[in-house]
Length: 306
Image (cartoon, rainbow, N blue to C red; front, side, top):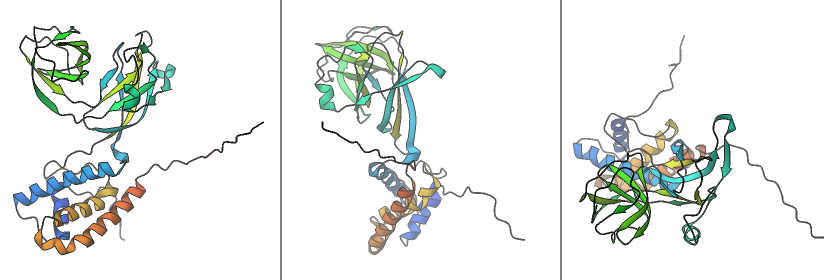
């Protein structure tokens, strides 16, 4: 009597995935450079996928406990965008989620008093690169872990609001006055507030962030910003790991990598039209299946004029 395997765990590690892609190009994985160039193409492929739309397996929930008077908070550096967000008050069975409206940069810019306090009702998502830039600024005097005003030697290279990195601590500041950073909030982006000596170099950190309005008010009414985010797919990594995709996208990833590699392999140039068509077909199949299958309900609005 014949039996099935009883397992559903088939996957391809990185080396196997690259071998399959090379074979579709009519070539073989032979050298270390072949592996390196394929890994580079695979990373570029995942970036393309991120730009093509929402990938359900990369949606994650996160939350930020808000601080009185702080209107800018960093979000994880691998965040592509936020999909939904609410302001939560209370906890456990007494928690309440309140809608917060996402606004554009021009709308946020037009708010006259960005430091006004109250229940946050609007949020602007500032999508930055996550890069860290070297500046000529240094600390002009030592600072303690509790200081909220920081004197620097030259603030001209810093934004009027943003994030800096001093030693291993990330600090947010909401205003600049001459060479003073004002309204500083310490220990941001998962770092710990610490003391720093005069002359320490300051780095500008271009973190993606949310800017809420109004700034949270009394700590007696604790606010938590709860969101669902779309994160980047993890990098290709070494030769033994599997990729950060569900099984339904394996064929699409192999087809896409083969198409990318064919553009770099002279003897595979004639296969490019076929490999591109195969890649687009596999993408259509996978992306069509990878969707939210909840029901849509449409309610007509009737307008009556008396």
